[in-house]
Image (tube, rainbow over all chains, first blue to last red; front, side, top):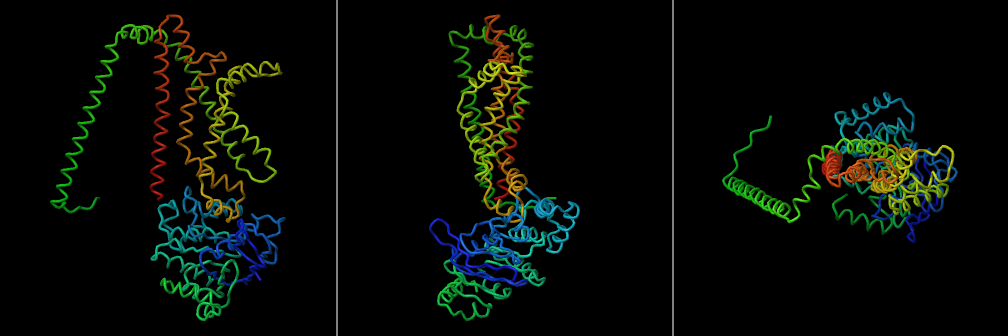
Length: 246
Length: 282
């Protein structure tokens, strides 16, 4: 078991955002979190990355309790990559500097080596000519692909993707999804919060439907998306189909 | 090579002609009103009953020439103090601003002291700080008390450090939390996040107000003359007292404006560039 989330609770003020939530992710597995806005998808990802402190339960990564307060969160995050909805590239750094920041500063890699590795990655995703550009000169899709590369160069054990296509124009979504599909082919373990049901169906090994901070239903995509047992899931999917997103 | 654009249609040509006519009219109007206001001002000042007296006691070429060397010598002190104090005040301000952002109970005393400092020294008038430093500290009769230049400079640094700290802090707080989340998610420590992600963006954003405060400091360095050193304003005052003629003040004022011009120009340029960058990023 790569990631083991057990009975996690997260409270903001008086509202319970995650409620007794448990979820297991095996190595090389892709898990898609679906659910309405406010169902806790993003919060769960932020808790796994220790950007939020949980209020109860445990999260284990590679059999280590990462929610133990004695553990150094920086060390944990070095093993987890995260990509955000609004890319969050550093606007004052070039694409290359964005990518090499963590390898050189956190992983103490030789700068020349880090640059070489970054260039290889950019080449692979077709952005080699953008390495000297600042993020504001790139399209949303290009920025998001850079953000994914920025997370990948640190060779994370686990990649968290938080609605990575939600801020993109429809014609740019494809390039990002293709990249994620390639990552699955390479065996990257991923947990992704998404509204792209079609994509979840294709790429996920397990689809998890969150509702009110709980796992309401989970299983293979054909079951959860094709033949859901819970009425709430059916209702949610019906609304998605209505909006033309499935 | 610019591509050949098609000839505008008749409608567009009409619009172009109309806009050009309007632009010419507004330029003429601006020129006309400027001339009228200028003439009125000159007439009002030179036509006033006391003008001849004022002209003699504020704009005497002879006295300007005589007092010039002393005022310039004083100005040299202003320039030296400005450079040293500006650098130190910027460093102090940045340090205090960073200390104020530290979280956790361990840092409470540091945070509290930094906060208290910015509250106190933004409130106390600079003149009082200079008196306290220049006359109070030597009064303690401690071994190795520095001279009045250092003490006066320290008063300036401490006062301006408090203002600049607040400018830096505003910059730090303007960096969106998502930038911190992105940096921390890469495994960067809080220090690394500040150093590589937050501060570079914060300083760029507040560069215009920082430079603006530096222009203000340029004028205030002269206040160390209250403690004895002879700066440009004090030199002008001495020259004024010798001749009972105010021209040396005008000499000092002109020199101060000339000194401020490059700094103001840089400030405007940085502001413009920041605005452009932000628009490009939108």
